[in-house]
Structure formats: structure tokens, C-alpha cells
Amino acid sequence: MDVLEAMQTLNACRHYTTAAVSDELVAKILNSARWAATGSNNQPVSYVVVRDVSKRRTIHDLYQPIWDMVMKRYSSGEIKSGFDSKFLDNVDHFARHLCDVPVLIVVCARWQELTALDANLGRTVLTPGSSIYPAVQNMMLAARNEGLGTVLTTLLVLAENEIKKLLDIPDDVATAAVITLGWPAKPFPKKLKRKPLATTAFLDSYGAALPGVDQYA
Ligand SMILES: Cc1cc2nc3c(=O)[nH]c(=O)nc-3n(C[C@H](O)[C@H](O)[C@H](O)COP(=O)(O)O)c2cc1C
Image (cartoon, rainbow, N blue to C red; front, side, top):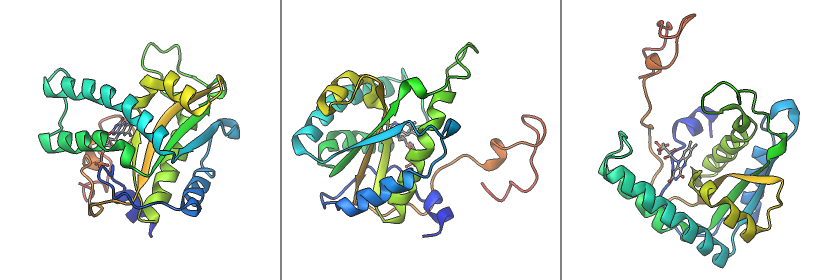
């Protein structure tokens, strides 16, 4: 598959069949993650592939109450979002069926090796994740290339202690995301809903129009 097509159709796949994903495919997808850049090439990322049904059930049981709390906040309007009710139904379905997704990939990182260059700027820290999520995106694009669906989830970092205990993850390793991996039950979208490029890409000055972007709406 053309890499641009993979990017343009890599959605959050929230409905899966229960068909198995082979060990070969999982290894191939994780190998794609291996090529991602990391700061100083220190490669702090590792993965625990969870196939065991009872461990998937435990992960589900940790995810569900976190999602229920978030869903309540969306539904009450406490969290403002552009999401419509169809979107929330899809995300809710995904949460309720998390344990049925055949593969859950827990993305880990040796946290002491992540540099927070922006730790003292008085705002949300952005830089530590920059050595983790390029690998995640590579993995998800490689899955898309195979016709497999994924969702990048981060809510489970709220249950990091329990997940680490469940999967014997050492103290110097943190969890950064859980990626669901399976065969989609619905077709991939033709086009994702994204902001027009003209609203996010600028020339020389923030907010100044960048030529050539109007065609990407
Ligand atoms: C950093 C990040 C964290 C996310 N965390 C979750 C999550 O915990 N649970 C979930 O269902 N989706 C999660 N998502 C998926 C987003 O909701 C999804 O990518 C976004 O709505 C765009 O969906 P689309 O690609 O299908 O248009 C996350 C995505 C990102 C990039």
C-alpha cells in the first residue's frame, strides 16, 4: 500500500472481528516500529504483546471504569468536545469489547532515559513522548498496510501500577499506551475528518497564509 494512502485511511478502528492475528504479522508490525527515530538513538521503547484471555479481561476491567468516568464527563458537557453522539457510541462500544480484541500491545518506555527539555516552561510537558510515539505511529501504519485495525489508547496510564503488576513490567519502565490490534469489522474510511491544512500550516509567522495549502481541505 502507498504510504500516503495508509496515512489518509489510518483511523481509530473501534469494531473488530474475533479472528486471530498471527504471530508472524505481530512480529512484522513491531519490526516496523523498530525503525522509528528516538532522541540520541537511545531506543527506550519496548512492547508487551498481550494475547492471554484472562490478562486481556483484566486490562478490560481496568479500562472500563476509567472510560465510564470520561464518558460521564463528555455526556454532562463537563468536557467540551466536537464529538457527536455517534462518536461516543463507537468509543463506548470499543470500551465494552476491549477484551475481545485479539491483541493488545502495551507500549513501554524506560522513563529515566526520556528527556523533558521543556520541563521548566510552565506548561504541559511535550518532549518526553517524542521518543515513543513515532514508533507507535510506524506500528499503526504497518498494521494498516496489512489491513489490520488499531486504536492508540492512553487512558490506561491511569492504571499503570496495576498493568505493570499484571505484566511484570520493571520499575524503571513506564507504560505509554495500549494499542489494540485486530481485523476490522467495518471498512476503513475513504477520508478522515481532519482540519483544513490552511488552518494549521503557516509561512514565516504564526497565522500567516502558506501558499499551496487550499487544495488540502
Ligand atoms: C494520544 C492519543 C490518545 C488516545 N487515547 C485514546 C483512548 O484512551 N481511548 C480511545 O478510545 N481512543 C483514544 N485515542 C483515539 C482517538 O480518539 C482517535 O485517534 C481520534 O478520535 C481520531 O479518530 P479517527 O482517526 O478515527 O478520525 C487516542 C488517540 C491519541 C492520538
